[in-house]
Length: 304
Image (cartoon, rainbow, N blue to C red; front, side, top):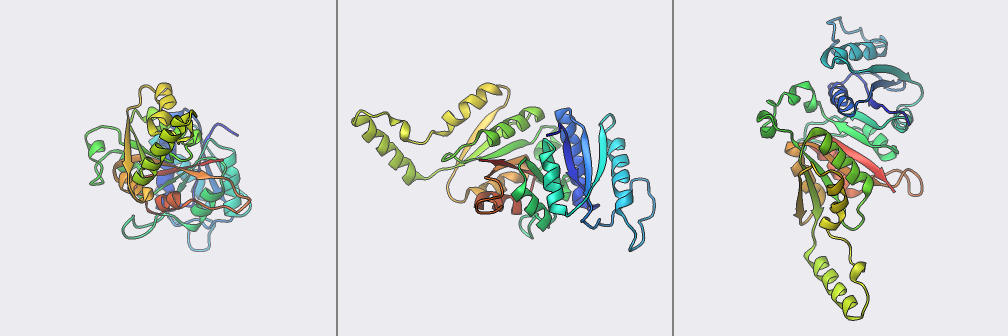
């Protein structure tokens, strides 16, 4: 794995916004940025940084796509190390391979928003379901304009000069250190608070409490009950003492609550269990719902 942040470009507004987001992320991590274009993907029309005319129909726009994007990012992010590469082969396998060589892969996601449409295209969906490294999906609203904090009604924190929260979905039945580690690290780098959203089932909680009492009465340890959020989060709070953590127990569809939380979030972090194989590449229902409807960038972290 190479220590780099990689972003896939196709010339669309969404991919250019993803490049801006990836540049800021690379700066936060102190890593170089790698711009890639998969050879099997037709570039979208775009407005070049230098004001040159858009190539006529039938021309190979990919020839100028990467250099123009590199010049644009160098102008906006002085000092950032930026490299470019055209990837041979089919788009999805090429981007999945690029993810394996990176700390993070960033892709643009298309759509009209969570109420009017979905944010994810078929290429991004296929890549995020197969990649063995974290993938961040970014919509066009996350370009350079939003970072200045005046574009969205949900950006009160940005308008006040405060960092927006990082939000993470916690599965108390099977908490994963990769997902939590990614979320705490993201919040720490941004000097942002971390909101931990987890489901709560009253019947299951009562049953677990009853089982624990029975186990204790019979002389067995009550450790069979699943750990609570405080226990799960304790080692991460200790590792990142500067991160302010709030817990949010929700009833019902956790995916819908995460989408609601995304309206004013800097980043939503969710997990994806397993890699391609066995039953094939797929997303769990909560993660699928979040990536389809999120209003903020969403990081999908694969784990076993």
